[in-house]
Image (tube, rainbow, N blue to C red; front, side, top):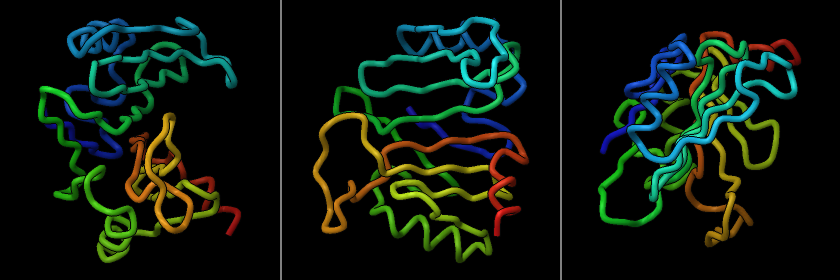
Length: 165
């Protein structure tokens, strides 16, 4: 299975703006689905659809309670299926974390690292995290050597971070 983050459009099979019921149906094809705050647009408790596959998880955010506004893919675990997550040819989870950051910067993109473990690409609406939700080996800097999650959001998802610069 290949999953491609395509900011600001979505990820493979899940375009941003997709209606909530369609997200639930498509997510169910990936594995078990858990829905929280169904229909809620509350800023701190908005709707989420979690697709639980035996080898990976995807969190679908529906911040308006009606349509897909962002998707976060977590690092695949070993198993029977070959799962690859590539962004513009970069294997997000199998390439040492510093390399994708350098490749993004070489593309002329601004990559911010304002918070330990997190990188954002504001004008592209791409987020990368090295924070793990489970035990993983750590690199010499105390963080996992590979990214653990990638988030794709709409066109202006992280642009507010540029205002504080």
